[in-house]
Length: 243
Image (cartoon, rainbow, N blue to C red):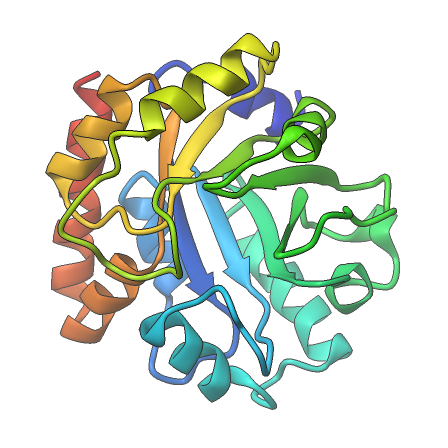
């Protein structure tokens, strides 16, 4: 069974966490920490010089990453090592614009499972990858159609604006989730953008999300050290496993 099929059939809620490629300030072995703490999906951020949808935490991480093993060969090697380290996790490459060429030249041999193209209405042409749909907070009919044709999972933007931790959770997510379900989308729909606390995760699941995506809050926890990151992830996993 492919990892994509495992995501669809997995009992319980999915946890996806952002993993910055090349950021020298992240913890050694951060991917392994994620795997140890029950993260199902590793969303690997490929750095961009203009991450226009990202807030300060992710933006600064990307800017630190540029040039630090982030050329085409370095990225391919990174993903090969990541697959060896985390053989059971679903690996998604996330970036701006057309990132397929930066992930790996030989898509059939690349260990990446899916691609997320943020801020782009088109998906990569490479058929070896799942085309993960990023559905913005202000979705339109084209976004819904792309979600219907997606593979792996749907990344539903949970809050308007840029990435970053928040102290609130938009009640409109109930409407957005219902819209996607009514469109017949059967693959997992995960809420991300601003989810920062166990209570917010519980709210997302209560509305019917199949899981959550956490980025900035993971970076914050990692900056506090390995123990803080592990505790944060275990707290989130506990909430997900309770539903």
